[in-house]
Length: 265
Image 1 (tube, rainbow, N blue to C red):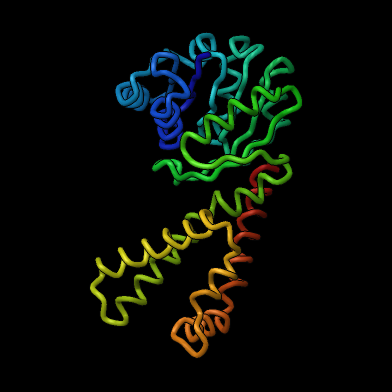
Image 2 (cartoon, helix red, strand yellow):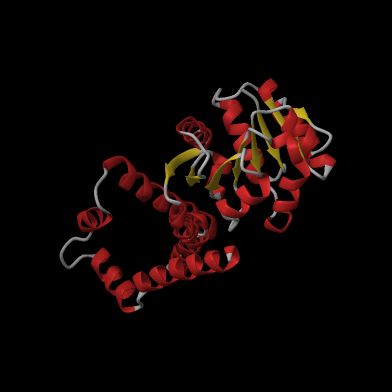
């Protein structure tokens, strides 16, 4: 089976490099195209893929196309592949672009899967969700899951949940970076050197997330293990609760989800 990437930006580079490194696809079965030739050249040189002259040539040479272009360019890019996409699988990572719009543009004989990845996929630590279109098969879903799992974790959801996924894991890295930055600033406030404080803050967040994933325990239970009666941690937790930090995160995910819905309308 052959896989194509239409668009060679950061996410396409992460996915293409991930599937080749994981052995999901050999390099010589991967094709790429970008309207900026230098971008395609960089990716082909990095992973050993083939470069196509345009989108139609890309689609002719592969069994599945991963659509990795900007939302404003996406439907035009699908139309440009024309009949070359007929009978094939189209995997879209374009934010806000619905299965209905993709299927209506690509044609009834094109199987479509919509994906919401996030930027930690660039280091193999992504969290992605995907939804399948009406014509997509269980085999298509398995292929997409395998592709996304090469750069992190992947789950299948109903399309109606993808906006919430966007609000949580799509936008979530930015929220976590704010947490890391704030914790590091707190360390500096208390006298730690900036570099040391940032390292400790980032590793604290990374280690805490790993504890949740590896132990399977609820974050509240893990929090309780750290908060000794009358101790330092509960004193800090009290300040966070007074500042409504928990409510602020709820509001952030809500706002990002609502914005995703607006963009897709």
